Length: 306
Length: 252
Image 1 (tube, chains in turn red, cyan):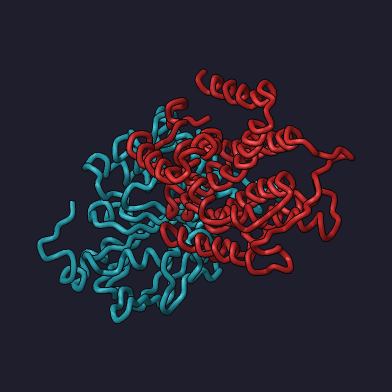
Image 2 (cartoon, rainbow over the protein chains, first blue to last red):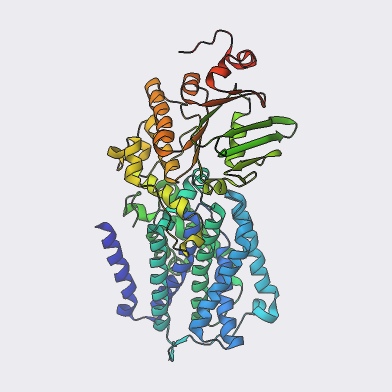
């Protein structure tokens, strides 16, 4: 089975940092695991036919919320990670019923505007978020009295979160919920005529996908130990779209591959920084022209995804 | 006489200055096959869409089983027990017939995310039985989009059946079908009523089909009801002949 081979390859890649042992490789690997829940959240929205540009903002909300809950309220890190991830979920629950009435390019624009507003709030509300000079002194993550001080510790944490979110998204896809979401995407009029409340299901997907983004944000905050509004803006939108497109939206495994391939790119292209966006652009055009279904289409046949 | 299943009372729908349906009233009794006919632009589809919840009525009301459903959204109407089929084929083309029927049952039972929390039992029509009823039992594992057009429309009826409806709204069930498929469609509509107890409200252009299977017919012209009665009443009605059927119209 080709899919098994891909799983084996991913497992191998996941173990690679320990063989190399370099802190730098561990850092890149950790960043990959952090991006996976975020891109999977975005992918869930793509599956229901909505390209959400709000996810970097949800990511940021998760990051700031987790950090502040620990710093200001002294919440234990694991709890603040979960409660922090619930913050973007609640925001999604609040704005979803308005946003998700709108489809296509207008939804894209609306979520983009929302993301920019949230990012501006991160910049301007200096009393709470520290503004552009940043939020310092986020304590190290700890669980059951175990303090995570080294990069490999965070890699393990990221890996666990990535695997859990991946399994959650795959379970959703394979369950009746997945069938409902796909039905709504394929033929909304038909699905509604059979009684399905399209808006309620879309909001549910939005809430779950914001939670995934929030988890990713929380781990990012504890790992980096410092937050500025910078990563939660437009560049991350571009990165996420590249990940979904390169990996392939047809299967939950696609965005995971996309993250594995895309996150190290800036590092590899370090000497050609000014060309980075151009290379992204060429990659995007190439994939959309020659491999619309992304990398995953070379591995899994289109109908029965992994 | 038993209480009517569906009551449409003085229904009017305007689009700007255009009156697409004007003061239309009729009832559908349980176990009835009711037809709506009329020339193009007569307001049949508008009326259909108001009942199905795609448009709000400008005035008047629609009630089902004694409850007002005017202005309810399409999915609420579906949950009340009114299923519908479409003029064009609306099915999940990339899925097998079995997956299509399964999805319909899931969409009806799990109509919103909160239904997951309440594990209340809900009778779902039996998938295999429905397929056998429609003559699709040998095709369950075929991809729906690969079937002949007539069979795809039959799958559409299957989707509506899986919702477990009391009333089925059918938008031109014979459109696009060849003569033998039309005969099969007429037989199927009768069997829906006779064997499954599903009342049918249909909009159709095919006169032999309408005259052959409907218990009562409403004729619309330019948004106005011009006749309502049995097929025999309607086809001898002077205004219907003038507006729609023409003097040379004959029935097989």
